[in-house]
View 1 (tube, rainbow, N blue to C red):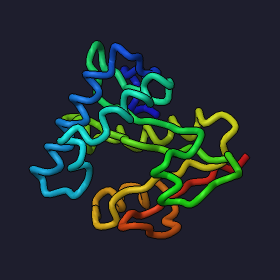
View 2 (view 1 turned 90 degrees about the vertical axis):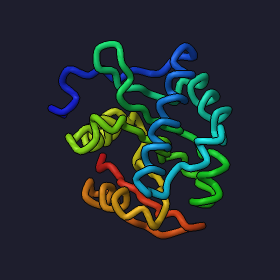
View 3 (view 1 turned 90 degrees about the horizontal axis):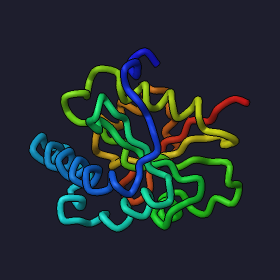
View 4 (view 1 turned 30 degrees about the vertical axis):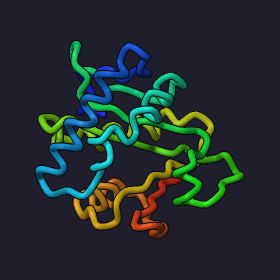
Length: 168
């Protein structure tokens, strides 16, 4: 958690929407420029409506450094259509689904991602597992989740499925 000292995590508001979408597109462009196969669809506005809906539903968080957004992530307590497509129907409702964990490049590789994952696990409420997916051939991202003790539980439609269950 030390990496989040000096940072503030809060639920995003509708006023943050345009800045979050702009940041996600900048990160998607950075990934494309670095030949990382992830999120190319964001560049064409592919998820803008879904991003705005998650913000309106108070499911999106931002990490602030002073007045700047340096990271964002979305936590769903109910499956999205995409989650059902990748994971199948989850009737247990004991899982949180992590989407769009994004950190601006200047804060990458300094432990922020791990600190955010730790924060999520410590603030998950009554949920037992955190689940996420990423493009299966994105080696760096797959290694990041494995290094942070997420378990690879399968591959579906070209996406690695990871989960980490929290001992209660």
